[in-house]
Image (cartoon, rainbow, N blue to C red; front, side, top):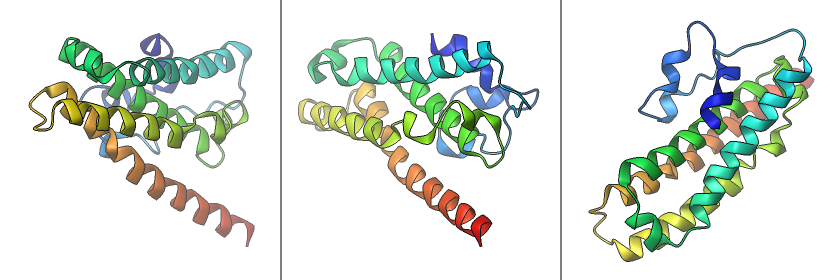
Length: 167
């Protein structure tokens, strides 16, 4: 379902950002739609996008690490990473100063810190079972650690910008 609603973040020039690899440097922090008015179907789609990203992350992090390791590597881990990437991209679009997406997607609705905490817990459990990280699933889930640093940097930049605007 995430792919279905992802199009709400597309522009003519940023579609390639939604292809692998899902790494922080590819997050389109400036190139996203900026509609003047949020119509009801768009509001519903944006809310559903965030909800489905959370559902994917929750489903994976609520599984036993042994089960996650036993599932097909290139079915589960990339889906989790993709959902996290889309969630963070939606945050960047809605938190951007002046973007109307922020009217229907407040920053606290993304729960980025909680997602990072859950994924860190899953990665820790997987590394206990796979200490050498010989399974690609372990490596891919562990790679979600970029989220903490990226989110911290992004939140700091936004805070500085908002402080500058109020001066």
